[in-house]
Length: 583
Image 1 (cartoon, rainbow, N blue to C red):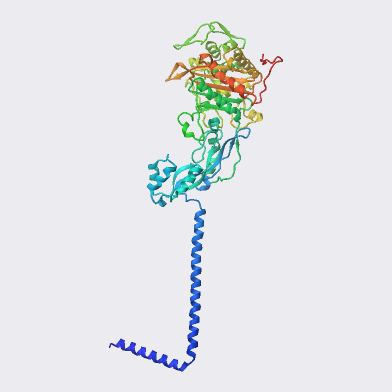
Image 2 (image 1 turned 90 degrees about the vertical axis):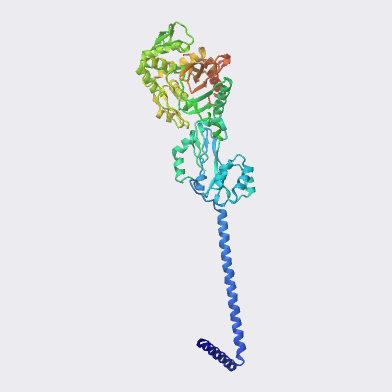
């Protein structure tokens, strides 16, 4: 036996003997010692069980708390998509001058996926397609198998779609609350109100204007909230707007035209009460109008306005003092200049007075009045009326007029009767308002404005005496000239037609016109300017296609249906006949 083994054996025997001797000495006390040891052991065991139960309770409490936290928390937002409070930020309601809602926010949800939690991308795509058959399956599959942690699948779902997708129980797919812009009037005022993109940011019309005033900047830095904002009130009257839009849409169809438009403007404040351009679009679904409907031809389209420009040429001549309303001009022979021949559409072939030149829409007589003023004076006057510069207003979609780089005599002659300068129909109406309201040029506004506020920004551009004469000429042309179809009994309508050969392929077409009618009422003390245009009509009242047969009747229809809403009372004689204004 080894040395170490012997030492261990001796130690064991010594321990055994010591224990036996001790027990012998203790005698009856051995049972009591054993009982105390058992009690201590039981107490320790119970303490250990209690500690273990407490530990498990705490663990389960932490797990439960985290589950509740995850259940109540918003999904994690990754990449360029903003936090939930950004996406839920409110836009202010847009209302008309009477408080009628034109645009408002409604709550909706959007479908998203967390690709790292998707179990089977193929199965998820197939299941989603049963509810959203229009989804791009390949595109959705790529999103579900991407390495990102967040992907939009479908924005702005209906409640029914959300309910059906929830019932599918697809792991890794969820919903995020958002806001959707809703336009109760649909197409009625689409070009004025505009629309927003998928992230509720304004991209056209007054929606874009609102963002340009600071809303977009606040949203970008996260300072917007879900709080209700003060509505933005516009100058338009929704009732009149509906009438104007209906008239131009009906006119485009009735006269088989490419497009049409109209505006009603308060001559004393510059407020736009109604404005429409067709084709248009539904801002609730703007993508459908992307091809042609987004184009607002009233403010963002420039056209040669034809004989409506004779109003400005005549006003220029009278305002200069070089031409009197009693003067006459020889209109017997065409004007030949620079290889061009200027003649009248329905020539009288005689000497015409200034009122006759306006009434018969003589190109020859108008050109000779412009020649009296000269090229520099002509250009200066049109600039003074705002017809050669970009119109200033809240609406973002405004196009700059075009004019010759260098004005020569031939340019001045053709511009005098509406060829050679292209302007927007809206700024043509604005310039005409200055000839009706006492001689003040007032930039148009789509926001409410008082007369006092308008006077602060107004510029005097013509003399009051010139205004009186232009009112007389407008009335003369409506009663005895080409504007007779715009007359509405009791409302004393005055105006000027414009029939221009349309430029097609760089040349003037003999088969297509751009027609307009520029009017004001009641002409004895004008309150409103109404302008209509119709692009390339194929017909008109009585079978012709000139402005007096289509653009003028459209003005008459707008005034007949909206005058009472605008607060204009008709004037009738004792015998019930409409009173006419005399000067």
